[in-house]
Each structure stands twice: as C-alpha cells, then as structure tokens.
Image (tube, rainbow, N blue to C red; front, side):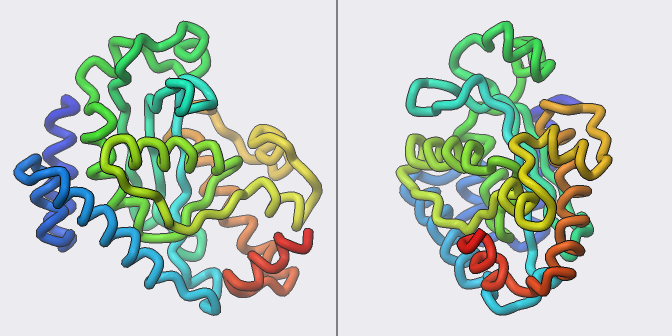
Length: 242
C-alpha cells in the first residue's frame, strides 16, 4: 500500500469518526489556510474542555507520542521524519497513528543510521504540512505523554506555527520525572525500559518507541495508584513537589 493510499484511508477514517466539517475540508485540500487555522484552533479548545482535572487517571484519555527528527532544534532547521502516537485509556490502546514525513532537506547519514529512515523511505511520504492535518486531530483527543516529551512538543509547536500560525496549547506530561517519582531517576528512555524490563526491538523508530512507552505507561499508572495519586491534579501536584 503506497503513502497516498494510506493518506486517503486516514481521510475516510476521520470523516467516519465525525470530524467537524471544517476539518474534513482542510484535510482534503479544498479549503483555504484560514479555515484550516480555525479548525486547528477549535480542536485545541475542545481538547482543553475535555480534560477533567479531578477525574481518575484510568478514566482520562492519554496519547503516547513520539517523533523521529534530524536533530534537536526546529529553530535551527532540524526536521521531523516520522510521527507516531497511541490513544490509551487506563493503559489500554484504543487507536494508533504512524506516518513518515518527507523532509525539505537531505537526511543526515548519522540520522539514517540511527532511525533506519532513508531518502528512499520518505520519497512518497506526505510533507509536514499535510501530515499535520491528520496527526493533530489524532493527538488532540487526550493529554500527551512521552519520554522527554518536551523535544517532541517543541517540534510540534514550531510546525504548527510555521505552517498554520497556530500555537499548541494542549496538555502534556513527561514520563521521565514520573519514573523518578515512583522509582528512581532514569535519565533516558533506555534506562527506564531497562529498569522495568521492557524490550524495545525497534528502538529509535517512532512507532517502536511508542509501543514500548505504552507498556511503560500502563505500569506507571499502577504505581501512581499505589502512591495515592489518583487524579491529573494529584499527578501535577506530586511532580511539582518532587
């Protein structure tokens, strides 16, 4: 199945899920950028209203997210090569997303060696502006979670502003301090996976890392419960004191 076929499958899936009319028009490329901006803004507002600060953590939708990039700074011209996410409720996956992204510049050799993503792989992948039209609706359905997620959010924010003049305002939580809260400090995802005995055979691939983090997140939910951390408010308060 080629990337174009996958793109239209995603479009039809979003339409079947009842995505607002503005979203479907923007997704299919039949609308102006202003309407796309309004659509993205409405998604984020809806996300903010849907978060129940005092709801139980097992009842809150969390979206595990990861990106593969060509470096650490979108402001310095580093680009997104792949985006993946998994919707979860109570640690169980309810939906997944993954796409490669066609960069504007050649992929550095050391990044291809690390991620396995080559120029041939992204030849028919959607450009970032197009990929965002399906990625943003997916991740806007819950609170974002990831290991050192600030890296991914910085690229997301830069991309949304660059292509749509929109600011990302969705909630996100970093797994790294959570692991330190319930166990001991694990500076890297590799350290955390080793600590919990979680295998990640496709490390440094966006969907492979998401798959491993989903397992980690399910365990963390149980450990947070044992510490008496029951709500999103409790979690933020505990992390602020840690």
